[in-house]
Length: 74
Image (cartoon, rainbow, N blue to C red; front, side):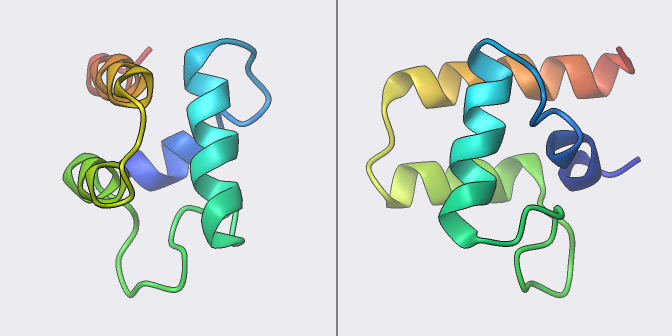
């Protein structure tokens, strides 16, 4: 499963990963893991978007948690 698909499936969660998912997907309006791009979201792409928009350090922490969880297959 791609990171984007995994991230989109986390919108129901409470806590930092769910908050990140809802904020990130809501900001682009797609909610499906691709946001009008030809490729699904990547961890690096989400990080770039957060940095570019002056995201809070907590968002980067949540992204790191999400990436670790996705990579571990949990």
